[in-house]
Image 1 (cartoon, rainbow, N blue to C red):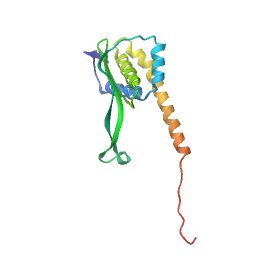
Image 2: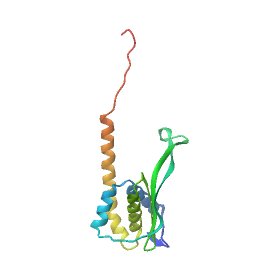
Image 3: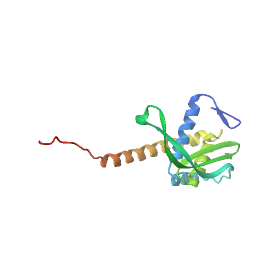
Image 4: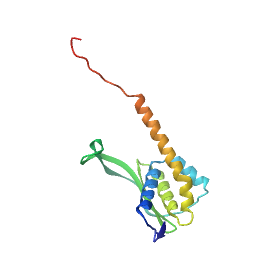
Length: 157
């Protein structure tokens, strides 16, 4: 992986990894991100290109995951774009938590740093994956426990 003018160049694999960690950071627990920032002793002052702000986007979906897209509805999101030592960090998170957007953008920038980003990714991305899987498993378990099965009977039986 090489860095050139704050753009990651190289294979699509690199872009896919960044896409993954941006998604993981966007769905991460903001308190956990804050703890990691404190644990690492980071006292960074980024330059904001777009200060954390809240807005709305149109969410699209597909019926059964296939077929044509349709507009599902608007959702509230927060975004932030910042520059840290010449590296641009980006984040968009669901909801109106501006602090979460800032932290996610900050970690995105740090993950891209040529000297320390690789080590930071190796330490945090697997934990982000694990935490996301655990949260999804818990949500699926909650949904399964509330499942209701309906059946019908013929009249006269």
